[in-house]
Length: 85
Image 1 (cartoon, rainbow, N blue to C red):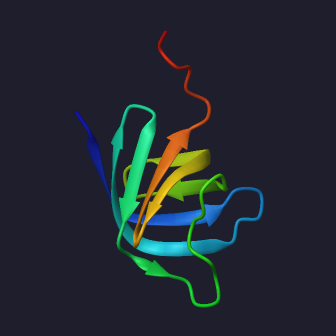
Image 2: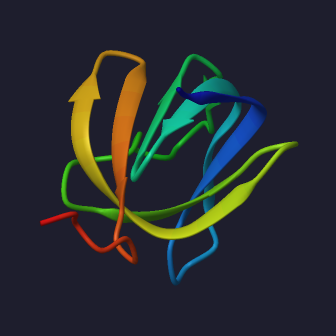
């Protein structure tokens, strides 16, 4: 079961630079998916292997690794989640 996120902003971990705002998203276990929104002018959208912070009206996450990009949607992996063996 996933939890939806609204009014998502994505910033670069460690730099705090906002790169996407107003996106929608969902959380499913250790995976956070975001899409839509507006990429800040002059900033590159999230790139695979980059580390990002995500903040929404519901939750915030720190130091996520981007594991997938497809057009205007991005998939992130929580780094602090232990993988189930």
